[in-house]
Image (cartoon, rainbow, N blue to C red; front, top):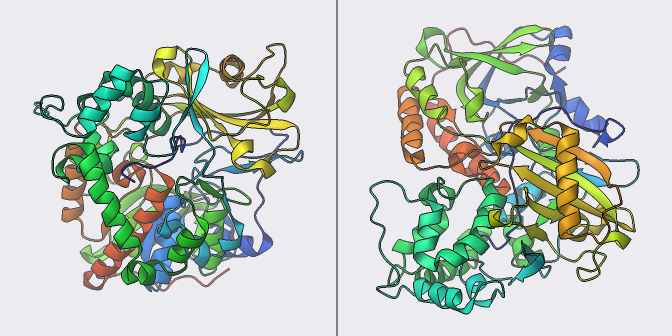
Length: 561
């Protein structure tokens, strides 16, 4: 539909700190995978050259980098692809953890909305049988004045405004007239800058729908401030509806776009391009479903690493600087590893690191100062992911146990500090032992940056109190604390003026053929956006590659170790 159907794919998160609760072990890496993922220190100690070479170097093994590396090697046929990761295991900020008691939880991205791109990639890396889908009929809820209100399963921008009990009849009528594009109700935007989400939604659907439905949605997806987030960039697909239909109303544009998508997905071209992904979407996915994998989302980057050649993925490599290659062709990237510095020379270089991580990495290249100034304008507020477990018998009687729902979001007007809660054990019952409810909570964001100053224990205390207020009938009980991770620089904010930042990135790339900058600060924060980035960027790089020379001093790649 016009808007992603799930109100609860809460956050795709940024940079990481160390984990919590050392008694719990992380999802393990198989021996077969370890044979293909080479720690840089081991590669150097085993006799690999301090200077390596490849056709395309991908820095970062998160969803974006893993998808890019796979599609370069397997779809575009690029001969020598090297993917590097600064941490000791692949996945970037995708972190799946398991306890000996039978709990499985996520500390980064938590679920995905299935797409043909994701499912084709899952099939191609051997994860088709590990796909797990939550029941699409589970309700999404909003907490307001002591009660949980289920959203309808359809488009929360339109149907949610009409059928949602929380919204008053005057609010519903206002939303309906705006959605229909009735002149005099829906006014054109008169600002001279990029319109905010708050302005756009209030203009189209009225203030009440914005405050009760869309404000908590934006807090959940971006942990952002809707008065600052630019509609054109943060919710681009919905923004585009205004110009699509027979009038400026979202309903007309949404119906047109829905029909277009339906026709596209039924086309032979769609089936040929996405192969098994298209077939899986048709046979296994109901509208509104959320997906994951049996052993968590980190399974995807781990599976990508297994599929690539030995030594094509190297961990423990922190990028220090990028320079022009010898003779003016290609690039030379210098990394810090446990065994010392390592240089990789490449024809093309793709950086999928967060925009806040650039620092002086590109300092030696023309235009780097202007680029860095632009990238530094992208804000990353702190967000904590807090996974707690409670006994089912403690859940409020009017809510019911075991919990049945995707989870709940909380409007900022309710003065509850937690942004929203995913009912993880309801989505995927096998991830918690019988008799327990596992809840993944998010707290912080652009309107609560002070969260970054709290200790983990203080964060748990706040979240526990919020959960008890919303869901529990007992306040004298203590949760089982499974995971607490404070991300000091979490989700990139697509705020007003983001278009100028994109223009600065594009200008820098034009000056440096073969250097590609990307990731969730540029092409979208959702899990599916990051997979799609890898598909599209691989094609862009492969198309440019024939015209790119190799550095004059480039050597053949080191033998597999």
